[in-house]
Length: 404
Ligand code: MG
Image 1 (cartoon, rainbow, N blue to C red):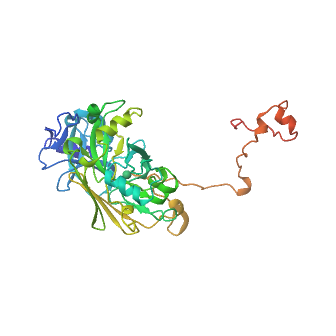
Image 2 (cartoon, rainbow, N blue to C red):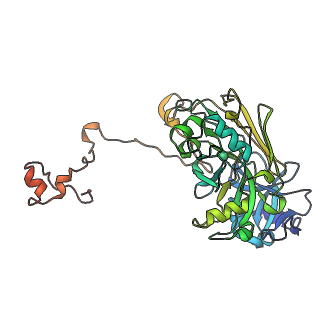
Image 3 (tube, rainbow, N blue to C red):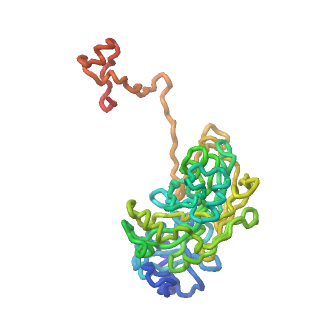
């Protein structure tokens, strides 16, 4: 692939385009010879994971480092290149067969903002699922309501959402704009905040409403496996006017959510100022900015998602994040392989790694089992009052490394 980039080096180069915003420190990357905006997508091809620049026609071209010809395999490499990225990257050959991945997997949990559109805050209050309501009954937040979703819940556009029907019967969608941090942010002011934004993507903050309600906080209901579709690509901030961006969500073609980011209660700058006041935001960090009115529980009766439903979140420039609600995955997500007593599990993304357990295991009678957790009396000497009060309860010293 490096050779492919090298061959195209003489044919293609990057140029700097004017930003929509004066202050944005991350330059737009437009390959000469391509028309329209560049979006960065991650694709799993035969040779591994690669980052592709996708033009408006959907054609993806491999992104490589100019000096080495080495292909970029992670969006974080482009983010870390910072303002110099335009000079260090070039495009190579077009994408062939491959599977689209989420454009980016953050190293830490995804920060999420709840009740960040006023009409959604009201529909949430009316739904009866908000167990964290404010005393005034309006559920209009005075400060950003922040929770997180684990990075492990991220899936790509086109992937199947597990409905987890064994633990929830109230599956819902939340189309949102995702912010990707480009520069470490610690205690930044609102005026400085946008300097730390690298770009944007789309997120579906899939939610189990009953779990969200019953657990009195939002983490579990929003963090189940596959509950964070993201993509289909990531776009540099220059490409997007985040203050005036239409955001829509359709379920089976029905327009459910239709708003503009100008309606955010707390805009992106305020969210970054709030978070970074005490939590350092690292490059590659992702923030889901909140969902507008039109979620399933906003209807009477509620319109929950079921197996076979298609959810499409879209915004100009950010594409369409499309996911199907699948059948519930089996226990441990294991399935028989080739009819043998062998079970396989596929998780994560990237090149496959095969782990085989149990081959050559000794007979059960020879298996050494770990010692039981020691009694608290074992930690005491014979002079310990507790031992003296209960003679015979002290156990022999356990092997080194045991807990006492
Ligand atoms: Mg949300």
